[in-house]
Image 1 (cartoon, rainbow, N blue to C red):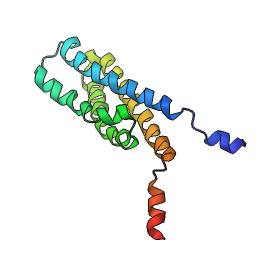
Image 2 (cartoon, helix red, strand yellow):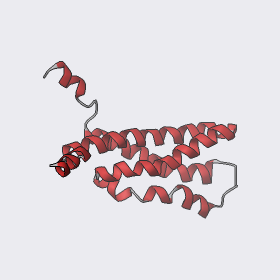
Image 3 (cartoon, helix red, strand yellow):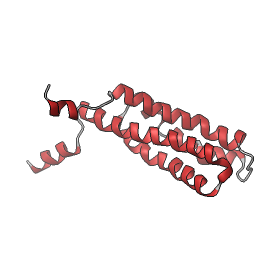
Length: 139
């Protein structure tokens, strides 16, 4: 193996990236209702509304994430943006909940970064590529 091949090799395998993504995902799935219903003293949102707004979006990609579908890993990053925005907004406006917002941000970042790389590398392993499709159309 040449030096270039070693530098281009992924640092994590796709099974490791899948586990990291699922860790971030299930951490968010458990942490968000726990934080917003049990751990917070703010009762601005009702329990059903909290569950709908912060748990329901995470349930949409559940099946594809558990099955390891790279397409689901890619589009679930759009869902995780909700949690990025919520955590950053909370960090900005609520000084008494900064530690919870940082935890949410950490889980969302783990899911986003590991999920992005999983989608890329697993897609390559399966031979899924946008470039490949474009090249076929030109021929």
